[in-house]
Image (cartoon, rainbow, N blue to C red; front, side, top):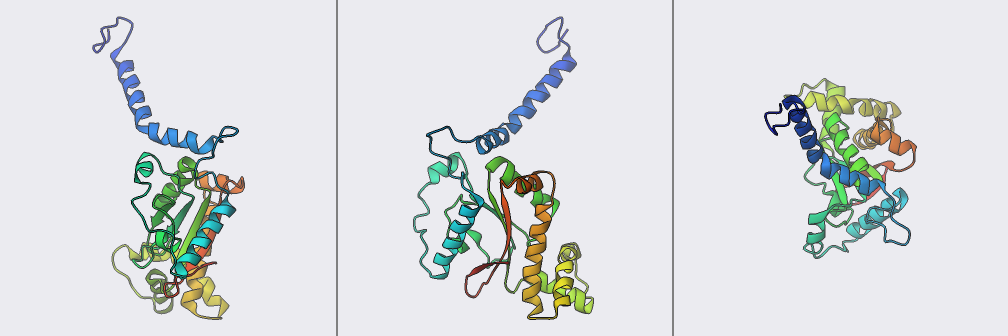
Length: 246
């Protein structure tokens, strides 16, 4: 007899399993709803959701926004507008993997509304399991059609990686783990022997991290291969405010 419901044919163990299963489904409900909304095409004649945009159109929208930012003619003036809609759902048109540098603010750099960008940040804009999981969430459940890996000028993380390569500098704490992901870009940039090593390594690191995402199974790799998303590398110049595709 079940000690919970009193049913002679119901055992407590299965009730507990059913309870756990129900609890798990409830916990996943917001994710599953988001997945269905992002994956299901709009009905004929209906207005497509805000993130029903091609990767190419998303990239153009961001680059147009950056041009406004560079010209100091941003379109964003009233940040209170749309708060009620944002409280109900989010429809980012792109995911941005950028550096944690305080001078890099993707929403401002691309002149986008709150809620338009799904941003993950870490020093050196490197791909790690946790950050990859966040980007997978953006692709799978939010329907983001574009991922931009954005390095930036005067990146301290890349500069530290150069010092490690050049002088065998010893870094404290967990910094060596971070630098380990950037060193291959420094070595490749060093081999070219042309231009500024730091600038070349910053661009190469952005390209390498974008390449890593393109081959990261299962979600991002599959979405990229099926052309549902695009993944591009870029660099942001802090002095001019301009974003260049790398």
